[in-house]
Length: 484
Ligand SMILES: Cc1ncc(COP(=O)(O)O)c(C=O)c1O
Image 1 (cartoon, rainbow, N blue to C red):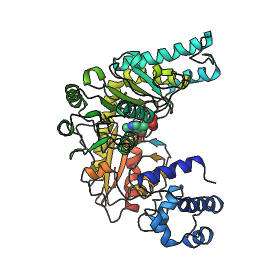
Image 2: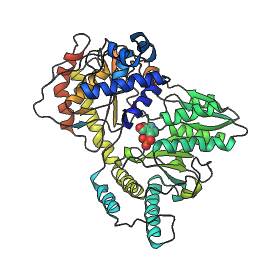
Image 3: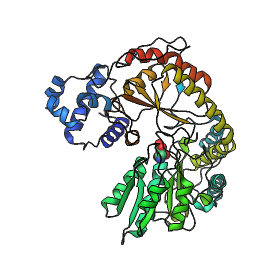
Image 4: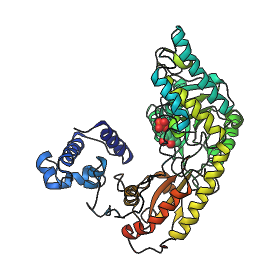
């Protein structure tokens, strides 16, 4: 039986590769999964055909990369199934170290907020329902109010302009659909970009299916959305502009202030996905012309499953979840009190140390680039080097399959992310990398993202072993240095 994690991953992979999952896909995937659980190797075509009736030809038609996709979608490591994935590197390390370079993916809980969560779990804050009028309930309500104040003050907005949600994705859905549904009779025009997180992209696509006009803007050669592009796209019937502050893959910072000014003049609400920006750069929605702004706890060392949406009091949204009227009638459902408390504390800490962390991480990022220049002279850095947060470095490695590099790094304890790879079941690079004009057949793309625990030793560890890994997995001998 496929477990829930694997099912979710399969759905993600299907979405990313625009594969319409059918009963035949699932039959093959389930068989391969069970086979691997039992035999610790993936099944070959003859077994799949014998037990599922799906032939080799069918598999190559059903899945974007045939058996490769079948394996990777269910988490079977690929060694040499076909020519799209190479064997991973086999390296002996002197002193194994866990190096987390995937802070854009998610973060760990920071130590300072653990005591709050522990107290909540132990019941020290009471177990009351924040909507109940008992003392217990009132105490929970006060805790939520405190967190709401903390988050509001980090943005210099009013507490009642903050709505808690269960994730950044939910906040994005609420912002986009919540505004659009107010125009459900007349519809209207929505502007967004091709580089948004799927929770914005797919919300807007969905609204397109409902009859709204939608415009998806492309990035320029630096990976940025320009104010000019937004100006040209605005129409008299535009009801919403939705543009992210910081891109999750390449870390570029969009010119939100300029776009905000434009939207203000045009009297169109600007919704900003600030999930990768909150706690990293200063965000003052009132001064930046932002009407709605989403963010998420697990990118700032708070728990997963808590997010928020700022909604300027001038605007209202149609709720997506109806019911008890919590969160100012914008998002019903009993609040996740413990996570909200932790989110508030994480927000305070992130903002307190924002400037110093920015500087520290910039120094580390620059050191990383110095090493990269020595060890992999043929590399490229994707996206503008000037307009980006230092927390992200998206690197193109020449002649390297990114999935193979990702798994090879994983094996020595280095955790990174890659938007495109054979491990993701698709050799196709993400739209933003393609939009930059990167030769995606030649460069394998890896995202390194830095955070609180990143230090120089992490970077030295990576670069100590990178030359050998590249030597083992490169398509052809590379012009790289063997390091220090
Ligand atoms: C830019 C961006 N927006 C939204 C989200 C979704 O946030 P959550 O994981 O809390 O749903 C993410 C998560 O990676 C993101 O990077």
